[in-house]
Each structure stands twice: as C-alpha cells, then as structure tokens.
Length: 230
Length: 230
DNA sequence: CATTTTTAAGTGACATTATCACTTAACGAA
DNA sequence: TTCGTTAAGTGATAATGTCACTTAAAAATG
View 1 (tube, helix red, strand yellow):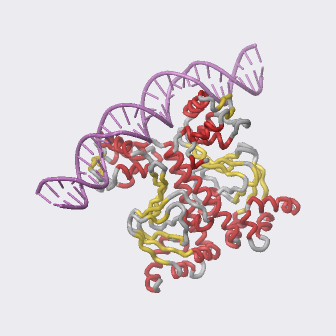
View 2: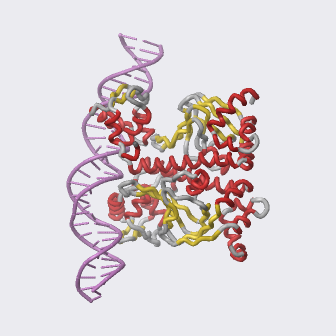
View 3: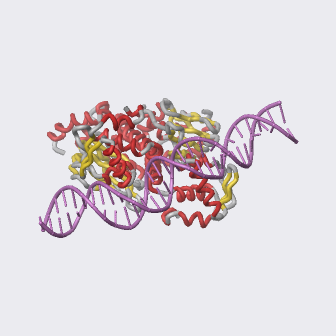
C-alpha cells in the first residue's frame, strides 16, 4: 500500500481497533504496510462453505451478514460484521483449516483491510495487543451466537420483531426491508412476519408499505419488550 | 505439581492436545509444571454468568455441559466440553473480561488441568502450537453453535430426537435420562418430548421406563434422519 | 414394612409458529 | 399501458409450546 494512504488510514484503523494502539513499537503501522485495502461491492458473497482463506479481514466500513441455509432454502442471519469487526469464521479457517457451515454476503459496499496469513500469524506471536484484539472478536461472536440461540429458543416472535423494529427504525425514519428479509433476520417464515406486522398495524403501532415499515407508536412497541432490554 | 505426576500425565496430555506436541522446546511439559490438576465432582457449577476466570481449563476426563437459561426457567444445552476440550467461554472472559451469557455444570466427575492466567498468556505468545490449540477450540465452538442454531431453526423435533437417541444409545445399551433432560438438551419442552417418545414407542421403535429409554428398532429410527447424517 | 415425599411422566385444552398452496397487489421496464 | 417480477396477503392444516393439572414410580422416613 502507498505510504500516504497508510498515513491517511492509520488513525482510522487505530481508532477502530484500539487494542492495536497498545502494541509495542510500530505494530499497528507495520500491519497496515503489509496489508491490502479492499473495496467489495454490495451483494458479494465474501465466503461460503468450503472456501479457503488466505487473509484475515478487518472491516473498515460497511456490513457483512453471515447466514446459514437449510436444505429447503430457508435462511437465518447468524450475525452481522460491521465497522471495527473481523471475520472470526474465516480466521478460524485460517488457523484450523476447518469447514465453516455458513456464508458471508456484503449488505452494502464494504471497505476492508486484508492481512495476509503470514503477517497475521507473525503478529499473533509478536503482539499481545493484536492477540487480544483477535480474541475479543471471537468472544464477541460466541456471545452473539449464544444470545441468538437464547432468543430463538425462548423469546416470542412479537417481542423479537418489535425489538428489531425499534433498533432499526424510529418514528421518522422508516425501515426499508421486505417481510422475507425480516423473516431471515429473525429465523422465522415470511407469512408469520406478515401476520405479525399486520397485527401491529391494526393496533396502530406501524404503517406498512411495500418494502417499507414506518413506526407510528414507538412506546407501544417498546412496551412489549422485557424491562431488561430498555 | 509433583514431578512424578507430571511425568504420569505428560503422555496423556500430549495425546489429548496434539498441537502441544509440535511446540518448540519443552512448552508442553512446562505448561504442566505450572498448572494444577483439579478434580471436580459431578453436578458442580464450574462457572456462571458474571464469574471471573483466573485459569484456562483443559478437560482431561469427564464432561461439562454449557447451558443458557431463560427467565421462565427453561434451559437449553449449548454444547458439551469433553476429554480434550477447553472452555473457550472462560478463555474469552480471561482475555476480554466480558460477561458470558451461559453457565457450566459438570455432568460427571471431571479431571481438569488449570493453567494460571499469566502462564496461559505467556504460552499464547511463545508457542504457535499452543495458539493453534486454543484457536482450534474456539473454531470448534463457533461451528457447534452455528450448527445448533441451524438445527433449532430448521430441523424437525422428531428427527433431532431420533438422532439424539441413536447417538447416545443402541439396541442393548439403554439411555439413562429424563424427558426433562432431553427437552433441555434439544431446547424443547418436556411434554413435547414425552409425546414424541410415546409416538416412537407406539411404533415399536423404543421402550420407555421411568428414567430410561431402550431402543428396540435402530433402523426405523435411523430412517428418519436425512441421508447426510448417516 | 407402610406411608409420606419427591420426582418423573401423562393428559387435555389451547396458543403460537411453521408450512403449503395458492391469490392479490405494487412496482419497474418494455 | 401492459407485462413480468417481486412483495405481500390468505386460509387450511401441521407442528410445537404452554398451562394447569393428574397419575405413577421411586426414594425417604417413621
């Protein structure tokens, strides 16, 4: 990578991956010097089952959704990787060369930093801060996945749907998504989502348009959630 | 730890954690010298939400189940840690000091090796083989959790139940468990498990006793599973 | 040994969610 | 404007979860 671009990115990266800041010497910068900046267009399949990984990917901007698919075509979103995140699944594959049962797709244009495998391994040995950063990503994913299992198993759909709506929209910023996408996000079926949304609409909590959901009563939706989620 | 015990355990450990075998110098042995062997009785809560971890735990023998609990008391088993496994959740906590939303309980008497945090960190830096071992554990758990999400979301209960029965029992070795434990294992409700088992019994596939399930027709149960699980 | 007490399992009614096989409506492009 | 595509709606039915119990087996106790 050219030097001026490195300098340009340096602060951004260190801001996104604060652990690198603690690294002795010039770790953070050296990693940048040996890495490659990538721009990936929306809708690209970044990885899928059976892929081999040659790079450790850090996301600078944009979002990647990681999904798993059933034989019948139904999908569920496992988690999203956003600004500051890294793909631990490919990392895992980087290290243990195992297959991962999931697929990653960019949800927007993504700017990422690709750290080549040898550099990654070198820094894993040299920098405690870098290790900490990588482990932190792992821990995050584990906790997200456990929380997902918990929600799928225990939480009722109306509550999960309400939560999603509240997190992703507000009274004056409608959510642009389809019922199908919502079903995938929550691991449900489109029809179920449609009916539940219709129920919310009947109660005057949301207003439905094709490809768009407007929240019209934030508080009513919020009152569905358990107190711990406030 | 006493020297003769170290020598006694060395081969077992290296056999269980083959990656340590590749470690340069005397890593594997040194880790043992600085670690402590622990015996934990059945039914002990090894860790629960909010705990602080001071050790990295390697399981030598026995089994720990990791569960998550809903507010209403319903539980689901996330995974089991068995011979050769390590507790990545506590590791994660070891490194990033975050809370984990789960609880670990021994299912049998457990023999474990506790590596103190400083030793763990030292070896993470020094030994590529040790890092690989630790990362491998992480990757394993991630994949297990993703597979669990997939099964909970997509697979039908009769199939999951049949699979469990086939994995944990055979025609002449009955499964000793309760319907409640089975429900927890599969993330379902006791009544649902009872009814499904009764259905299997009506078809002559199993025989039910209090606290015991005997498989009487292995092939019929196996015929439920999709071909990929054979 | 007989009798509580505890724990496991069974049951019916009902609620929620998933699936199937469609139809209807909205939008964009020709 | 019409046509093709994608999004959303619908009714019937199956599967699973929840609730409020009852029944039965095993364990503990006198």
